[in-house]
Length: 116
Image (cartoon, rainbow, N blue to C red; front, top):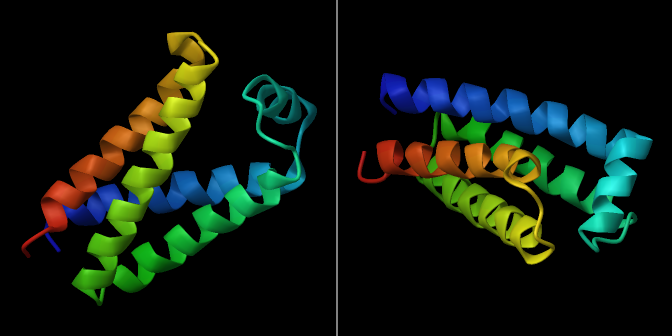
């Protein structure tokens, strides 16, 4: 992978790990946000697990470019769905912005890994 892809992978690994930890801890603010998004609270563990699987895929992806590409595409889908979920309930840009940033980082990661 290129240096840019490596930096993006590290950022995605760190943010997805931190986000997964928060998902598993289920703080009240997150629970309230999930209710607003009409996402069942019991799904938080599933969402955290998906993020940890992505972290594993990105880490292994340093040695296996195809796995990195697939993981990047999966993250694009995950964060596109997150943005769609925020949009569906008419969340503000402030509430949607983190998902938009992660979607953008995921797209950039894919663009820097595909065809390597």
